[in-house]
Amino acid sequence: MATVALPILFPFLLILVFVVIKSSRAAQIVGVLGSASLLAISLFLFIQVNEQGILTLNVGGWEAPMGITLVVDHLSVIMLIVTSFIVFAISIYAIGFMVGNHKTNKFYIFFFALIMGVNGAFTTGDVFNLYVWFEVILISSFVLIVIGDSKEQLEGGIKYMALNLIGSLLFLAGLGLLYGETGTLNMAHLAQILRTSEHSLLINSSTTLFFIAFGIKAAVFPLFFWLPASYHTPNITVTALFAGLLTKVGVYALMRFFTLFFIQDQVFWLNVLLVVAGFTMVVGGMAASAHYDIRRILSYHIISQIGYMIMGLAIFTPLAIAGAIFFMIHNMVAKTNTFLIAGMINKLKGTFYLKDIGGLIKQSPLLAVLFIIPAFALAGVPPLSGFFAKFILFKAGAESEHYAIVAVAVFTAMLTLYSMVKIWNEAFLKESPTKEFSAKGVLLKIPNKLSFIHFLPSIILGLGTVFLGLFAQSVYQFIAEAANQLIDPEIYINTVLNINMQ
Amino acid sequence: MEILLALLVGVLYTTGIYMVLRRSILKFIIGIIFIGNATNLIVFLASGIVAGEPAFVDGSVQNASQMADPLPQAFVLTSVVISFGLVVFALALKLKFFEITGTDDLDQLKKTDN
Image (cartoon, rainbow over all chains, first blue to last red):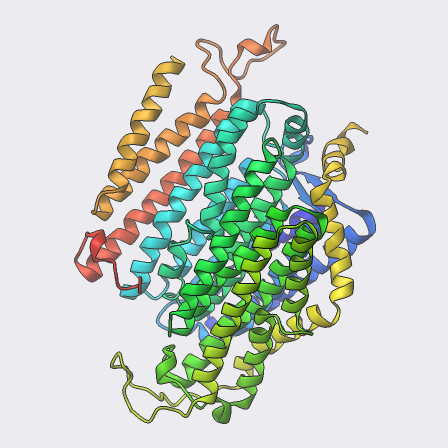
């Protein structure tokens, strides 16, 4: 199926177009149209996966364990749809907020390079190819994070770069050891070999390296320190994009690897994941409640919520994996949305610092409504998406008698609610402070008005959150199918390897 | 030969980690280069070292198990290019940071932490 390569080829095509385009208005229009087409492509793939099951493409005609295989299964197609949905919203958002002294087309080149990398990571069925896509993501995010060249951005960029470079080197080392042990890097072939072999010692060494590498990408405890040090520095458009996509690629890789082939010492690794999940949740949630900069609160929140996804993976029942996937898509949509709203608050008030903000509910009631949707979804208020995601996870935890982690998760949910209520109280309900300069000496009340184009992306993502909540049943059915495929990867292995034998 | 290369990998990792933990950004990048090269050697060693046998031959091959596996060598080529690009970007970022702040000291990078 050649369509499988489209989520990678199409962004590449767009990059070439942006190299030629010089006018920023044209770049913006192509950006929105391009990401809309990307959404259409993923929906098309969704329909195909629904009808035909797992789709594969052997790139260059090399048969499965030899060449690079692209695989789109249920999990991949879910991730592709959510990614392109978020990208579509952010490409509209960029029109209103990605303004400054940089060249617009340069931003779009790396924007779509990042999307190409993310889509590649979601569709590839080959470990080395996954490494290459990680590097594509990495180099484009390096550029995006320092667009604007301010002192804070460069500093955040260096911290982001330092830990992520080490992470990808560990990934490569683990990959080398894995190849030395098994002689293949095709994921399905690896799964087939490792399910029947007994070499757990050497596999464990590469499992450890992969765990640290993906742990850094996913920002789990204790490897998350690059995230809060860098996510609040770039333009808010870039932060929203990173918040929605980057850490989730790490979680996706963890899910793939720990369900598909690191099953040798499964009990031990699942316990490690469980402990890591608990600490990630609590530390992220606690740190979030200590801050007053909206972007920092939300950055720590990303970490806290990663814990829930790892928790689902660590419980390792079909219900728990489904809960983790549901939580992941809910979180991608809602979290991006809160960052978009943080950007709008900054546009209205000239600062992200909560103590200098207030009275937004009178100034912009629409913004208040738009904030409530993702904030309540993150806090887990029914009938929004977060309620169902957390409910599935708690139910799975209780059914498999992991009471401790469920207690930690419930406690973290309180912390989430606290942080969201804090932003709500300080930014929206409180009277606007009357002083002219902020605590950091910045002039307040820059007279900026928000127009419809500024609100539109948040409205789109908010509708997405409401949709996930209202149609949770249908969404869950598809996700449960994805979770079953992960728990029992027989179909995945057979589809990737068998097709070539016919 | 394998043992020699394995020792070299160990030495490179040690040096690299030592350099990464230094305070200077430039030394950090040098450390990354060391660790990167050590990692590439690991991938290279995954194929096993075979002396005097080319990876590609024309015609029929009697005993393929005596030849070097070409795939890890292709991996190494790819990852050398990738790490080269990343190091160049890191150096450019360091230069830009130095131009704006005039410091190379990682301990000065505390503005974005709290």
